[in-house]
Length: 240
Image (cartoon, rainbow, N blue to C red; front, side, top):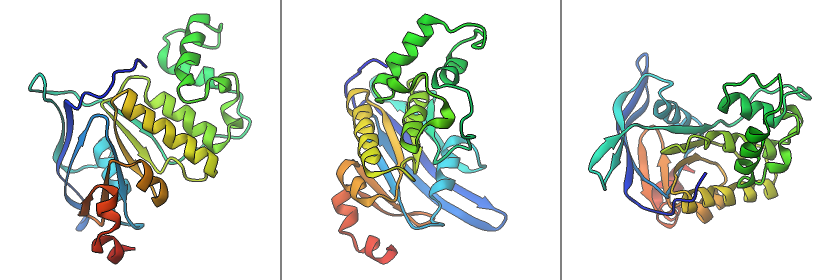
């Protein structure tokens, strides 16, 4: 990924997003504007609709409303490209597939089991560097720690330079050092690569430190603003 710097000229708009399952309204009339170079963190109690909102943004659940990317400089709407890091992946321990195999299978049309391509290997290793994961390239996916796996998945999610990066509680089960490293990488993605990021997190200390905007969700948006505005609000005290 090349450094782009912060431009502030792209806005992702999720407007009037609602999801119903049968007669049950899971989320209702959610409106979010996310600018490039901005980390928006969604917080809320279990059952507040956080995962459902992410699935709606990803197009994985039927929803009403629309999601668009607007280029202010060119005054036009663009195609939305999303990178996604799930909370967890079911990976068998000690599976032989290496990090190189995993990523090469995504970016290359060549059969990866025939021969290791030096050019692709170098390309992958260079991309992994910004996630402090280049030393993992020959390691088996099944032997990675929770923090190592999440950094590799983050590298994969950003291969195509997405407009929007969605992270669903990606630090669950990671130790404090791993969490700090993960958030430092996220901070670099938004500042140096101008990425718009949505993160669901329960780690309120890290949210206070790194978020640009916080959304308190309880089926709909209860409070939205800077970390200071949300964490000092009566709405937060009522929910938690």
